[in-house]
Amino acid sequence: MSLDSPSVTMDDVLAARARIGDKIRRTPVLTSSTLDAMAGARLFLKCENFQRAGVFKARGAFNAVFSLDDAEAARGVVTSSSGNHAAAVSLAARTRGIRATIAMPKIALASKIAAVRRYGGEIVWVEGKGAVPTSEEYDATVARIERETGAATIHPYNDRRTIAGQATCALELLEDQPDLDVVLAPVGGGGLLAGTAVVVKAAGARIKVVGCEPQMADDAQQSLRAGHIVPQLAPRTIADGLRTSLGDITFPLIQRGVDDIVTVTEEGILHAMRLVWEVLKIVIEPSGAVPLAALLERRVPVDGRRVGLIVSGGNADLDHLPWIK
Image (cartoon, rainbow, N blue to C red; front, side, top):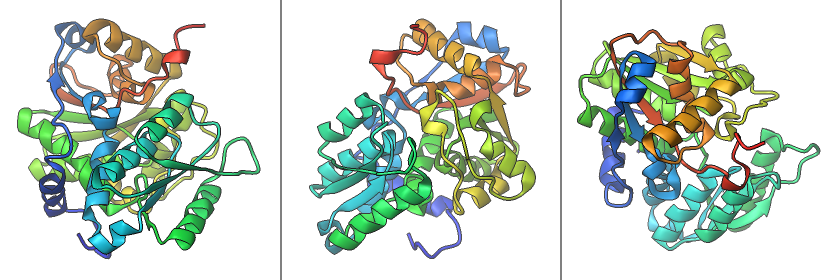
């Protein structure tokens, strides 16, 4: 893939699948008559909580890490993340036998810090003026590490290699369920949603693509309606994976391929998350529950339709489950 190319194409997605096919899991698509009845539609849940590192981000991380030539890889990789991407890059780097340095905030969940260390990532704390580091502070930390080590930077979402890898999730979903009417995906920085849009629109314009995000972090919806990126300023959502702003690579892809972006309440996210635990007997994190919350809160008209939902991950903080007060 040329990083100078203007966009991400299906050729990039197919190349990513060939590159990472033996390194990731083909995750299952689960169904439930109980959830169907509650949503008023036929639901197909693409369960990336069963993915390596417990999250769809493994797809993008593996594609980016294994896209490097040997000379680049020898200098290691660096990224910034508060959780899932950090763990995914650490795992991908360990699989290739190279060093991964992760710029993380001290406020990251203890479970996600532990996952990075478990996969062999080296953590560098991002020092910020406030309690939550800004994107500029993350970027400055990554740039310093890159200068000092020569490591290749892998952006969590605004990277064509990352987007192409994450798009393989939707590719598998449509191969297993080609006759869907709508595909829903959560959106934070936009890598998953952008990649999903590339794949779904290549399969057929009749399939709608809808992004889903918390009302308390609704910059993607604002951006799509305004026609330009509206920065994420003060997200206050339990869906910690969806607190980032769109990027200048992800946003144009979303503009071209996404039909709508809807928002859901915090109460809706918690209800959907707990419902999946209780009904499907699987562990998902708040971000992964957002698409189901959008259906249960009737944010998307899907009566009687066949709907694909990307359940983005399962890295819940088991020490602080949100329904335990």
